[in-house]
Amino acid sequence: MNDVRDGLPEEGKYVLAHVVRDNCIDSGDPVGVYWVVMKRVCGISMAKREKMRCGELPDPMVKSFGYKPNGSGERVTLSDPRSKCHQGGDEGGNNKRAYRWESFGPGGENGQDVDYWCEIPLIEESK
Image 1 (cartoon, rainbow, N blue to C red):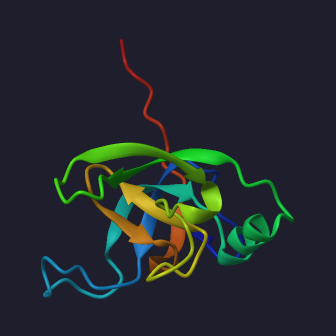
Image 2 (cartoon, rainbow, N blue to C red; image 1 turned 180 degrees about the vertical axis):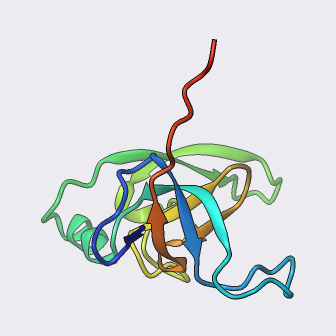
């Protein structure tokens, strides 16, 4: 078992992650048993975002999505500096870290919501 204060898994590698909050689906679960298979997705810190805005770090153009200003609700693809785009894993709002934890499907957790993680042993396919 690894404490996140001692180190993090490489980005995109699935691990078994201990979630620090209660399981919102079953409030009767005992404390400490909420483990989920997740991967870490990196974003940028608020400090790095500010350095990009000030020109101290490169601020590459990235694709983002928006809506036409005419109120039609029509989506458009834009190209904006990374410092102006907020993506999954970025520090800010409810996320206090420059990464997040994604699980299978639409779920995920903020960076600070996992305190321990474990390697998942691979099971070799039997023939």
